[in-house]
Length: 98
Image (cartoon, rainbow, N blue to C red):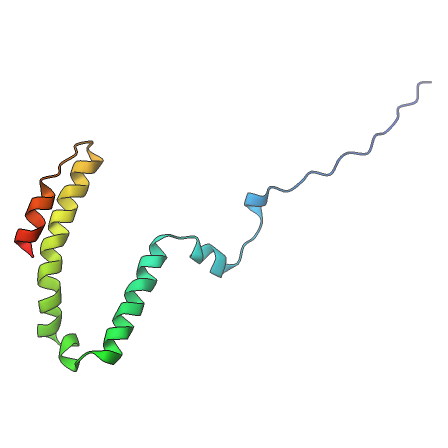
């Protein structure tokens, strides 16, 4: 009879994308957490160095009023860029809002 030679199968290499990663590594890969960490550092810095009135209601309103105006302009500019339109006129409007 014919002999069938058995060739040992090569081991299947596991894909490096499927290996387990730690929770800290998976969190550090998220780009939005850099902005959150920066915000926490700035708030912590000003919490310890600024006057207590900064974190009162009137102090937060003083900070958030110009931020809301710039946010509205930023949303409009980002919608134009997403839509493929390129509008440089927003640069002339920013100094008038601040």
